[in-house]
Image (cartoon, rainbow, N blue to C red):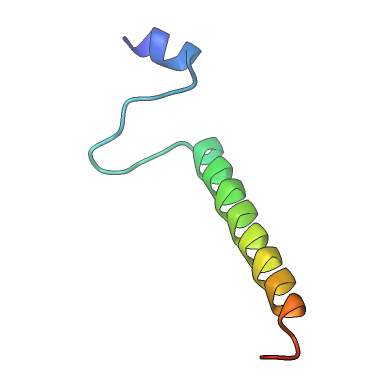
Length: 53
């Protein structure tokens, strides 16, 4: 199970929530990307509705 999980890029969850450093960095990258995209979307919407706001 573990070998097939590694091949698919998925790992079994640790009940204590521990992850290797690479997984933490990957999660940080994904969260930062989502945050930047959200800020960009809100900025564009705010620019469109600048006058009414």
